[in-house]
Image (tube, rainbow, N blue to C red; front, side, top):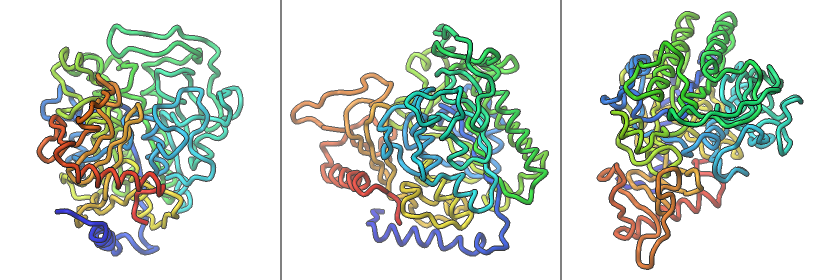
Length: 485
């Protein structure tokens, strides 16, 4: 079915109004919201998405049976910093000062002063908000972060009552933990870095805290999450939002001993198995605290897996399933991600949603749950996915999703049509860019209903579709928002 904008808005309104009864009213008890974000976890890493996965993921598989599994969920960017910005602000990161790529360990704060974030919004509804893990959105207001000083602005200035984590990816220095606005141990030592082989055991040279150990990071963060859940169990009268941003299975691939050899996909697969076990520990902590019944848990990834053609040739595993490309690319493997959600009594178990969605939609969805009306200058690219979570969506929720590659290539997806404004991957896959030739296609157009592998570029055969999608993307860029206000 082809939807014009008026029909789309009517369908959106119908889907939302169906939710007014069960979730409206002051007497409705607000749920806890736990958002577990893996780092570089691919669509094909989990058994529940890829039956041929070479990695055992029993906890994610069981979780999928307890809730809903989305098959067409996407990150707004194919790399980490822009996606994290989008998750917490509901806004595409290319609207910010970071036009492409990622921040590093000494980068200043990216989220603009005064911008509403998901935790800040939930604070206004009485939530306790906590974050644990990889921040990667910059700290401080100087050109180069000074870790000897209080880290302002940081998570505490962007809506978090508490935050414990690491500044950026686990392969960017400085290597340290920070708690709220202070470093736990100053990075007074240095590491020469680690390069391959083996594949994936990599981090850059730089400053490091003397007692910082790379394999211990994921277990340390997990213990902090479990402890936080235990604390909230003693204060169950107040709802909480927990954002757990794992640093794995991003490089360095450093699984601890119990997981070595657990998979048939090398160190990467073993690390994914540890990620799954970590997720299982979070779920077990909620069960032990008797908080599961009133908690919406979401498990997803910030982008696709960095699984190269060489990795595919070495191991019998397709981390991104059969989608084209890998992390950083504009092709679907760069941004099509696993997305599982469970909310007992609200989300029907063992269901599947084919609804097109984006990780920027956390803000719009949470706003509906807590009955918060978003102002026009917040969540500009965030749609309400609650109808899809509850199985009550009537028609498409999103008009389109805009994607952005590591090197700044745009694409826009409308129903089954995907337009990419350039030739090549725009990311890590070779060639990243191809110069167009006279008379040839200027970009890429794929009909994903017939060509999910993005193998047949039909850009020249459908000039009308190219023009329509190009115009919609240009309008989104110029008007500063994409959601229906």
